[in-house]
Length: 273
Image (cartoon, rainbow, N blue to C red):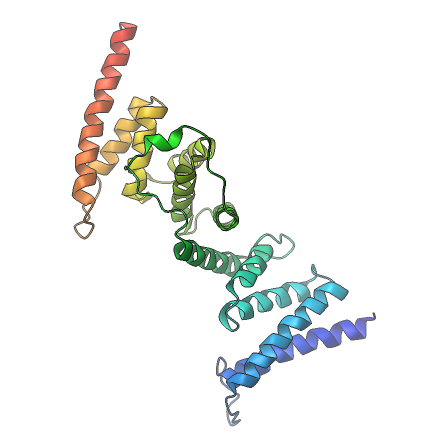
């Protein structure tokens, strides 16, 4: 297959995207040109673009700049035009992890995050209420991860690794913490919590997550200084009048402060220090 065929196929992809966007109204036509909208024809063109992209990466390359552009267009079309979210998610994640090129890395990562979060909400993945029956999750054999949970973890880890200073980094770590807590993955839960507390201001962490961290520090790690600090961060943190759980969290935190101090005193009493 020669270079002429490669160039022709890529030009078909570019044309298909541009023409479909004109037909569905995504892009306005040039001044003075009237193009009648045709949603059905636009969908047909988008479907053809997806096929052309598949052919391009199969017969030519998936690693050059043209393939990089084409693969992002395919994922975006699957996502926003053809309602094929799972296919789009795989594509976005592949683009995010492509270290040869970075132009689409952030939008691909964010779009993957949005889709994975939608799937998680639909299937009620990562559902766990911090502070309720927390300690029982720290013992026994961890529950197996469902494929969608594994994919969600992959997306969240990718976002945090590639964009640690993005506004979604802390929420992503919080969700990872919740997943590992809910499934009983103690080692991973500890590692995520360590990253949260080491690299991000404590005031940026959700109070509900701090509840779980305080409990874990007190009952599992036996780190009474840490549990006191975390409980104080909840108790003295900003007021959240619109959150119905705010008062109960503060009452919980006040109790944990006392327990942490008491445990510290008992520790030093036993050491006769």
